[in-house]
Amino acid sequence: MKKMKVMVIKYGYVNVEVDTESEALEKANNLPDSAFDWSDFDDAQVADDDVDYE
Image (tube, rainbow, N blue to C red; front, side, top):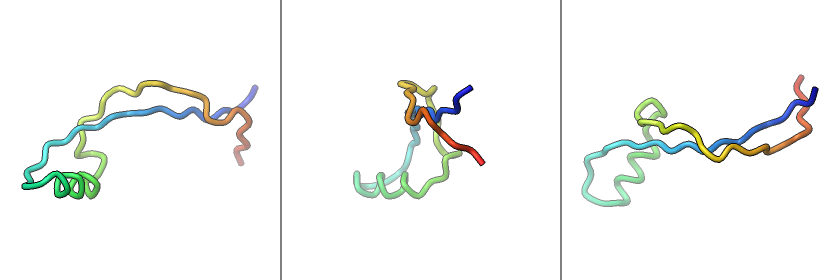
């Protein structure tokens, strides 16, 4: 049986109170994952089909 690494893409949304777009991006970059409403993942694809685990 092969071990493979799969990559998925997810999107998170959060509301922030700011004055500018740059402030919104900075604030979002500093929030923990738990602050976001995460969507279901999409577009799963194999990133590596020959993974060695210890």
